[in-house]
Length: 113
Picture (cartoon, helix red, strand yellow):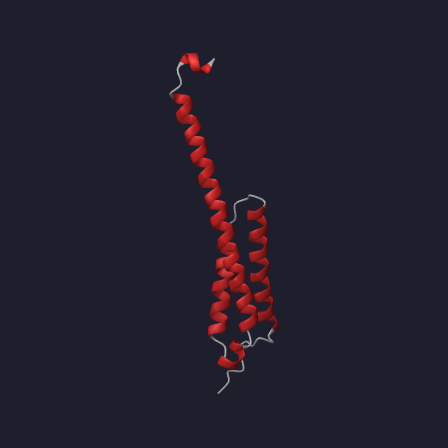
């Protein structure tokens, strides 16, 4: 029997939540592209809530969300790639800075002039 209270893909709240998750992913990717740090806790919370909502839906209704969820997964994959690049860049910059400091520390006074 279908639960009349269970949300469906046509439910504006489910659609709004899908849109919000998509927007948070896009915003995080934009910030990373600008070289800024991002707090992903809001995104994590929204994704968890969306998953819980979908878990409570009838199977046929949940299946109708296949394409929007595939788009969210693709966006999360791109976000992961962006985060990995940002981390690699930051790690390399940190290593370069340590190398410069170490080189400077071992210079003789004659080298510094």
